[in-house]
Length: 609
Image (cartoon, rainbow, N blue to C red; front, side, top):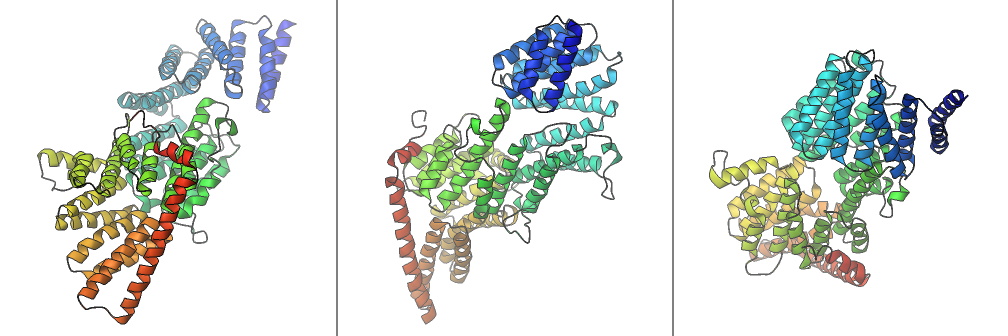
């Protein structure tokens, strides 16, 4: 009687679980554990109960207890290798996602590999090949998260070899996708391109049809893998600064990127279907795509940020995930969304909304950069402190440090101190020498050039811009002009960053005027003015008008002013005064509207300096 009841409860629990009724399924498994069960039945019951508690409740203490009990009992069983693997996979997932204990997770995953090895001669050996791949790949994931790059690559290679020897085509493809992720982190362009070619060869035939190796897999596997692949390629383009590769727009919807549209179509296609694996939760992928649109489209992508669903008022409880691991990713992305939004709002001098966005990510490492940008836009001294903190932030990437040092130098240069040029050079450190010598340069400059090659296009461009500003201040006009020309080419052709393009043009103008090329300077300023106006960039608009005022003054001195140009000069002076008054009004509002919030942003992290 007890056995029949046990079987009925287990069957009912599985059906309820499949019907997305987890709480009822939990009650069934709990009831089954109240009966006398055989060891393997109890292991299954505890494993399923622990899994459901982990995924659908916040009762993590009981979830851990049931999974650990299942582990201890399973390892004592004879045979049952796949059951052991299933238990260990769930416990490893608990340590990784709930307890955030990568070391314990790795220990459990290695136990799983031992179980696969013990059962390699058993009747379960074919299933154990899949489990071995699973454990190798998840072990590689944990090692990568801990920065153990070499160990991660080794685990991944072992999993790939096991998949190839067992003809597991899905795991073979996943191994290459994961290697592509690692290559993006390492910024290995050559390896990344080779892996992209390998993935295309695995999925597609030359005629564009799906490769036979992709047949007999879960219904949405290929579509989900293509989505995974698309997003990785987008991130690779962003990482390298090759924005042109992903900037093609829909002819009917100019504020929509084709690469994002195709990824969203794949995401909609796989919704609710079995894909065979999960890379990231769907809301996270949608947030990534929204960030891509905002990054590439600039002010035209602002709507995509609000559509991402990760608003400044979102909290962990507002999201669809109970699991802390799955919740963590949307919250991290929410910080990135708000950071992007804050930068757009600061560009338009919308200080009140920018403050709200910055406050929404308080506690994040990037707040120093945002707070520094806020202070810089308001022409406040606190900008230097925040950029300095960002440049010295422990654990920051080399690209982040380079950008923060560059921002610090730009902030110092904008000041009025007599030693600002020497202080700016000191702030940039080795970055000031980047790209200033040829390939055969040795010593400090040669090492600097090597470091320069490791930076993405965005960091290189910003470094060249600020270094040129310093050289121009030192009277090295020729070197400054050459560096600015390189930066302009990169900003225009590779980054498609109109904000950088207009800023570089404005910096180039005084050099051209000094060189006697008044017409060239005026042409540059005309282009910069159009870009700044389209981007609602008030600060650059003012700098352009100041540059035009200088151009008209030079023409007037040379007696080369027509009546029409004289009228243009008067109109420019009027517009300049209006813009300066508008900016002054916006700055006064920034301080007066919410003094507490204003002070909170400026003083963030001051104590930890």
